[in-house]
Image (tube, rainbow, N blue to C red; front, side, top):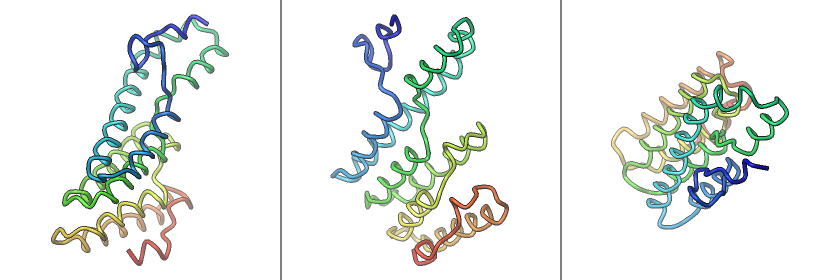
Amino acid sequence: DDDDDDDGPVRGVGVRPNAVCYNAAIDAWSRSRPAGEAAERAERLLREMEHERELQQQSVPFRDSSTPRSSRNKRNDRDNLNPTTVTYTSVIAAWSRSRRPDAARRAEAVLSDMIYAHERMRDASIRPNKRTYGAVLAAWAASDEEGASDRAQEILDELIDRYNRGEDGDDCRPNEVMFNS
């Protein structure tokens, strides 16, 4: 297969990591110490994935237009660098565990980016779920920032509103853990 010789995100090596590889690395960083540095590294990998996704979206119509559909599907599976719910949630969890003073704000910013990407691309594979919101709520619950409990309540209220509007399905139904954060 000629495509194996392409330079991918690891230039000059012929290696093309996909979302599974990135997610494994992000998950490992989300559980590492020191937690603050680990959260930054996890988020950096997420941003790499987002950047690669943007590049793929820009090049897909040209690169794939003459490729037979079956080859295109195989290539897209192998080259897939799209962040998923798991990706974003792992980064949010990393921030939640980091104990840094800005952790809750960083976790919430990743959630905002996720919601924006989900709504912009209408992609169910990046829809926030209970774990996503739970990790953001945990970050705010652990925060010493003034007004942290108010912000956690606002996020919970937003989640309840989204759930009541049917935006995120049952995957985002608030549960007792969220109410106790």
